[in-house]
Length: 122
Image (cartoon, rainbow, N blue to C red):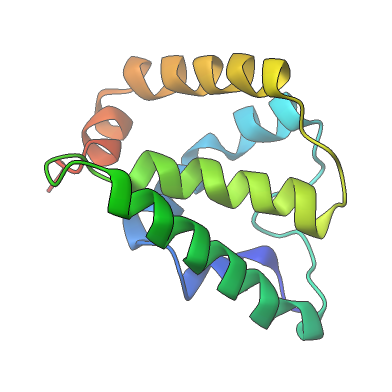
């Protein structure tokens, strides 16, 4: 069966996929997930997920200043769509703010991730 990684590979930047890989244990703990990138996705659902993810990211990137890397938004949006569209769970604003704060701390505590998310890693 196809996985969420298959969906994301067609939409996200390679760097965003690396960040998701490195943060998988933390993201799974924060969202009480058994799987993240390896979560099975029905073949008939893949196209609509890719489209939703692409549309959301296009809107977000259009609002960002040109010198701001969209990678953190790619990561957050990928997790949001997995939780809401694939797993059918609701997200609540207060909980999401706290999760984003914890993910931000993880980015900042790992120099490579921080540079990657900011679009400055080689």
